[in-house]
Amino acid sequence: MKAKARAHTNIALIKYWGKRNETLFLPMNSSLSITLDRFYTETSVSFDQEMTKDQFYLNGELATDQEQEKVSVFLSKIRRYTGVDSYARIESDNFVPTSAGFASSASGYAALTAAAVKATGIELSLKQLSMLARQGSGSATRSIYGGFVEWQKGQHEDGSDSFAVPILEQGEWDLRVLAVEVTTQAKKIFSREGMKRTVETSPFYSGWLETIERDLAALKQAIVMRNFTKLGETLEANALKMHATTLGATPPFMYWQSETFQVMEVIQELREDGIEAYFTIDAGPNVKVICEPRNESVIIDKLTQIDTVNHIYTCRVGPGITYLDR
Ligand code: ADP
Ligand code: DP6
Ligand code: CO
Image 1 (cartoon, rainbow, N blue to C red):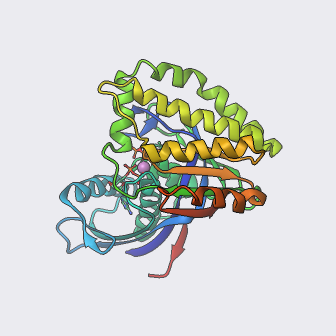
Image 2: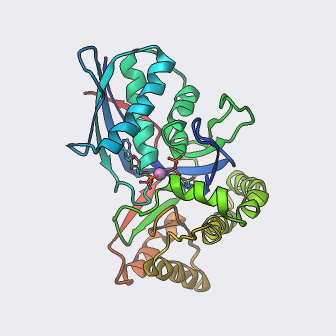
Image 3: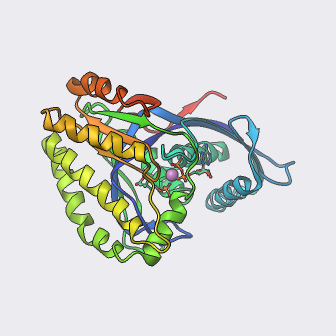
């Protein structure tokens, strides 16, 4: 009744932003991401008849009550699905900054799902794992797979058609993602809270939903054609639109800091000099730059000159979930 799994984070090119059902984690819109090789989580789960509650250790320390509760609520969904009824000891290590806009919730819940299900001894398909991971954190739906991955929002209110689908395998398009760290401080407004407030109060949210299918179709077309310019223009515009919705919320909020703008400006300058690079930003101040391998070093050189940049992580397209020896 014990298993260990690894899952990688992903960066959305078309963002998931907003839920239509918060219990089942059903999204308002479909999204599309690249799984990243550089950032991941390793989680082991061991079910034990003797335990009287779940115990969650994150990065070697017993997690806070609030984090225990979140993980326990999620494990109960797995228990219900698999029919296993004992509590578990969960040990997880993030090889990614936690809660800082580097998608630790994606790798965290994908790894937890894979390990927990494996520990029950019940075999499920990747599609079923994707639907379970979704109910821990939406972005985790996509981290079950490697490569380029679409999370189809689905139509049904029971969530049975809301899961991830692989679009391109790892290795089918060698792009680079430069994760530009300006801070690893935890965000003040979790993604969960930020998207909820936006859906409920921002008049710009309807504009987001109106153009999402067009953005998604353009991005998928760019992937099929391996058209980097179209991919870049589409993903950057989509990220800017997502962040614009937060400015219209009540109370308004913004995930960017002045360092974020500095990075965005440098990317624009690079493009003016004929070097193709595009940025995207999740719920935090750090920026992810997408480029082709041939431009990677010149872009890194230029970004390194910004004195507020702490670190640049070079990521390639990464793999889906894997199982590890304990
Ligand atoms: P991020 O940008 O890191 O995804 P979120 O606000 O979306 O930030 O999610 C952060 C939350 O994800 C944490 O508060 C915690 O509840 C959860 N999380 C992070 N890492 C793990 C992990 N390894 N296992 C389980 N849950 C995790
Ligand atoms: C901006 O998956 O972290 O990164 O489903 O509430 O756990 P919950 O939120 P989360 O939201 C991710 C939002 C985003 C965009 C994306 O990854 O698609
Ligand atoms: Co997250």
